[in-house]
Image (cartoon, rainbow, N blue to C red; front, side, top):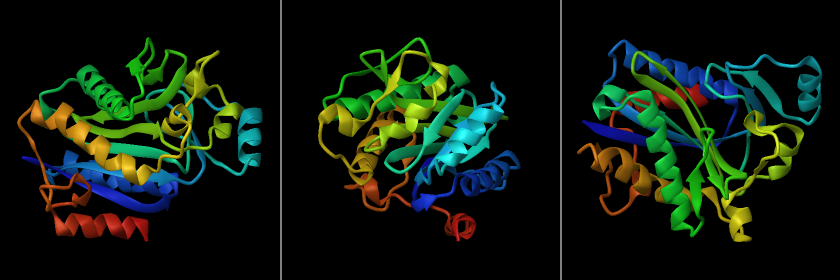
Length: 243
């Protein structure tokens, strides 16, 4: 059993991605594909709300006036921002293949992000709330997932070179007194998402695959950045949703 990986091109409208995700999750639930996937993307500016909260009318008007989209989602968590400069990683996995429960799955995601930050000499850690933090008061990655019949969806956003001013208009994840940070801010230099993706893949492989003796499908064994979907038909189906 292998895990396939694909980078979605350009900035993807959030609702367009949700439509794609619903399609892919349904394929796995109905056993029309056995492929476990990791999708990476960036979104156009969007505020999203998790299933635990209902939108406030005045807040909604304010956020829309900023030029961002606003959507309610089925993921866990509260309100957060997605946009350019933030790496969104969306694993669509069958947890049975990894012998993981939901809590362990989230913990593994956190570990893979912490290792990625460590590769940039950023000391990140878990906190009392789900996600990854720097010095326990600056959130560098937010996690919000959904699991249906052991199939995961949604995932996490890692701030790489995000414009953090977007977070000033909300209380990220409902946590008062906390702030958002990014890899670029912590290093005081611009770090592009394209350079971070292979670093994250290496750490995903270590945390999820090596420990579980699962192969990450790659055409070039020397480069994790060359991963593509194994199933050409499924790859074409994904591209249809993006066009």
